[in-house]
Image 1 (cartoon, rainbow over the protein chains, first blue to last red):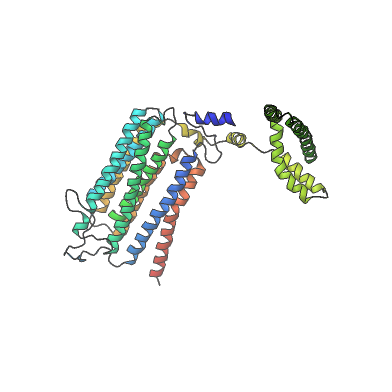
Image 2 (cartoon, rainbow over the protein chains, first blue to last red):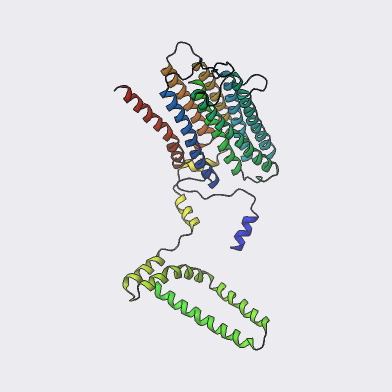
Length: 219
Length: 205
């Protein structure tokens, strides 16, 4: 017992999981992340279903005649800027998958580089969302008359996209922790499981955005 | 039968242990704590020799003892039960996995495949093109809203599937893991279809 415990403490390389007849070599971390992502998918599923039910049950979904206290008509959501944000998230997904590829090949510097690019993509997305809501270089939706609680159109938009934004923020934090650990050499020697697991979370955030963008903005 | 053997072993253990205690007691007079410690040290040494046996016994002890109490008249059933308990050797989890791992699907082995960067860039291009297409479809004039919705949802699902299969490596996972992910993911969509069907049915009334 003590010998194996010592082995474990000194363990630096990858932890080889025995091949499971059902789940192959999937690590416990990976399975755990997948189960979490399923529960998260249900959260987004609930929000999107609520959106669908509200939209399906309303006669007019977006009412341009709805005026706020300052005389602003409720604006429509812009598509082009958000399409750019979507593209940004797709780019960050590519850098994430490249970071994982570098980690598999044991290239620490390259892994850190791509993880940093992924984090940058996430931060830019959050800045983009801030610009969309409140405005950085131009007026945001809140200034143009889209107010939380004023209409189902506004409320479902803010709830769903901000919930996704919180996921992006979580992802950026999570990625930063993993990036620092990678830079410190914690995953040297082929132990890249944590990088794959953070990748799963990040790709999920991208995947959900693809759906949110389609349902909330495009349809 | 195994049950009886265990009992005998237990008794032997006690016999061995008792003299040791007696020795300790006799040496107390000499107030020789060092020797006491020695005696204590020798004990574990003994048990180490029998370590594999002892382990098995300890496992069985827990299981056998309650059975013993219940089946005081020493019915055949109890003996059989105990025997069956021992007949099924506690499988080491690792051994089981290794054994059952042999007839594996090739998908499980594919996990160790080298990352395919070309594939990642191809998927990136596909995602980009589909996004442009989506934005185009959404702003296309003179298209019915139903048709547009169907087109947009199919495009979005294709993109989501691309991310899941290629970037999240679901393509390389086992069938069961794929199903574990895909079926719950489909649940909200199925629920949405039920709601749409229900709304459609109400419209016809």
